[in-house]
Image (cartoon, rainbow, N blue to C red):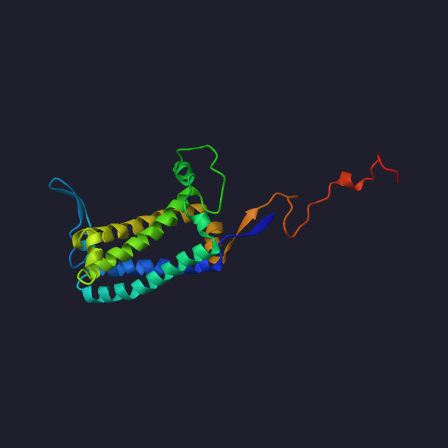
Length: 244
């Protein structure tokens, strides 16, 4: 028998689905800005392993010579990103949802077990299932902290004179820009892993973030809120210890 189990409240779903396209649009507009000066690469000696990004990437995505457009979009979307993020944090604090999201002393151990299981390197039973496992708690809390870091470093490189104290705290303009770029790469990595996990979990998990509930299998005879426990046939017989 299938049972409907409430999972994600409307507010959480709203914050999720607003943030998802906004963050992608901010990455896109950030690339329009990054085109004007894109020095970052991974290099060993004189050999470049990865360049962020080769010229053909900017050509293929039509990102060249759109610096002003990118800056306009980036700073307009920043307000939506910040307001949505602050509202999400306030909601989790007021509703008590933070208790299920913030990692605890067991989360890191659970995260290792879940990761090894998902990679097929561990066959044993998983830790007791909660709304969010240890790996999810670490990842989701980490993304919130990354968003805060993106805001601070973004302001530091956008207004390095007006926010000189913030630029200094970030290690200077160049360091703030490197951190801002690294956080962007972190979002992209999170998206890849997150979407892969959603596909792996199946439609039921995706529906929970769309409709707020998921369907779970309940063995026949298990009491539910809308169905009382089935009476045992022996309990319907009169007791021989009491007079009729």
